[in-house]
Image (cartoon, rainbow, N blue to C red; front, side, top):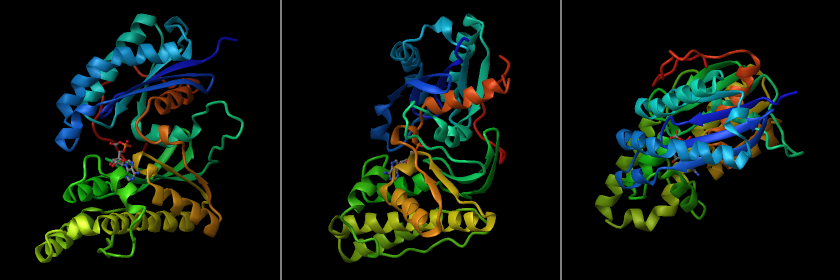
Length: 342
Ligand code: KG4
């Protein structure tokens, strides 16, 4: 029988990515990062769209080449429809529409956040792969999102808690910025925290209802601490950099895990996963392992390449939708924001 071969395309923010999945097994996952934003201290939407325009064709070409697949063998094209930066999304969406029409194959629209969760089902065909069992909880933490998602099936997910202001990644990046670290600051905080004392400084913890998060107060509390300390000692940040990083990191992880623990307990779920760029954080990963040991959770931490934005997660979501006959019409347009139902 002819294999089901899905080409996935991701262009929601500042990474252009294409991936080929054949019968559920990933054959390629090519990602072009955009270095252009680093000097601006954040993603510049207009520059991101232009870079996607330059990258999209070579990236798709390379993904097909590495997979050893001819475009004529593709069964369908899956693309990120949203949420994300509209100009960036338009590049991937328009390309996917044009390519699908030219090849006369179906088009599949994918929700980027749902795809982050389903990244846990990307298979590289290795024998030791583990996948969460339904229902499971997924902590989805990235530069733009902090959510607890209750995953009942591939196509049935509910956001049961989310940030009411900043995302966890944003909190890392903003705190890093006030310490003079480069963008994105999350990985720098993680690195510097390794030799710091996580108990050196304490910050206000948010008192938010239900399973929701808030990180803007933490950022302000951090800013005020630095302002007061630098008044007393202008070298305060340099002299305490490792302790500051360790303390802010420990606080973010504690806030994230407190709500996740509450959700796991109240919903009586022991399958717990993490997804999104912040799941690269070593303290968060360690905390997941510690919770596994202490509370009997089965924890699922994806390989690093599948935590940040990538097209393999779009292709695997496309694969599930393909088998559900869940296609989209050429008239569909991208969306920047998303509702509570993924
Ligand atoms: O999912 P992602 O790649 O894309 C966006 O949502 O933009 O997440 C990027 C976020 C950034 O805020 C970055 O600082 C954070 O993930 N991040 C980290 C680490 N690696 C990436 N935060 C803390 N520790 C890390 N090791």
